[in-house]
Length: 322
Image (cartoon, rainbow, N blue to C red; front, side, top):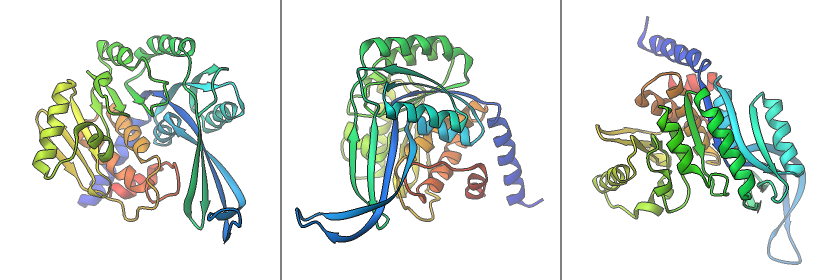
């Protein structure tokens, strides 16, 4: 058997074990809407293009896209989040049911479900319009209680923070999960990472890490900053996704760099969701973090070649790994 055939066999075995993995995904969900149209003239009212909308699409975004990515790989996923009692919230709920993803969505009538509306003309994003409000304390408390009831039933916890207020109790969630031995993966947001203290693995992208740690001029300076932050936050690992440079994992034992496998970068929207979903699925299947990073890097290389929030199918991922 060739080396490539052996690799494919091992990767198929990994997929089979992912099918037995149980993941709990918690965070900010949103509805991604896309309006596609033709651009043939400039508006006489202002120097902006006029888009004649010809079709539209809706996709699950945020933590819902994380759940969708993990589900696409075969993992058993449960999603906890908060939505508004509105049309967009009902669409998110219906799309999760259609996708076969188990979800507990707290409905908060005082907020609007987060919606990102993108206008696309000539295969380019011309405009994005966001609709969002912060959830209230009652729905947040209810979600925390639900988390504490469900966390023991899962192998891995993924916390997807988009800064929309749905993870205000994230420190308590991390503490509760770690206390019973559950690995906790966090996709962070903002410039204060202290609330993520004690998590197993943090997955900022390059610009998010720069916002927290400042600029660097060399690989050694980047490593110093990454390891310092990892120690300050008591993390097992810090994984920085670096776009065309691939991704780098910093641990006490050293540094692992994996170069990108992307053949063509079309749209990076949702790539971070794919990375953390794949990491969580492979770790939940019982594999070490080195293997999980290799899989996550391959999955990211697949989805950046697609428009908008997308998933990597098992066959696409096997092809990228091969």
